[in-house]
Image (cartoon, rainbow, N blue to C red; front, side):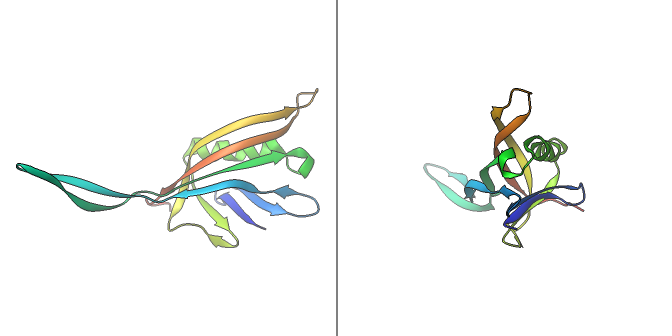
Amino acid sequence: MIGAIGSKALDDVIVFEVSDKRMLTFDNFKRSNKISFSKNNVLQQKPVSEYTGQELDTISFTVSFNAQLGVDPREEVNKLIYLHRDGAVVTLTIWGKAFGTYRWVITSLDMDWKRVNKFGYCCEIECSITLEEYAGRWD
């Protein structure tokens, strides 16, 4: 197993793996970390910057759900849709370790239906996923 994203409590987990029966990986993984400053106005002088803390981290990546690689695209994408619409707090695991300081919420899902066969079965969906760090309570 390469990793996973999802919520065991909601029973919606997508497993990234490569085996003789199934291949599901991610591409274009990108993490952004930011900090914030506040500007304090000083009479007749330039404002003074003050460090106010960290911003929430974001992660974005793409996943191609391909039926030819042993994955049911609709089933896997539906898991993501449910997690996104419910505002579920998810865990992102890569190489057996939870990724990031906190947990994550899916803030954006873009789905590109690449191939649909003559029977209307979706054979491949490319999905762009954006996560934002969730620093609140999740219990």
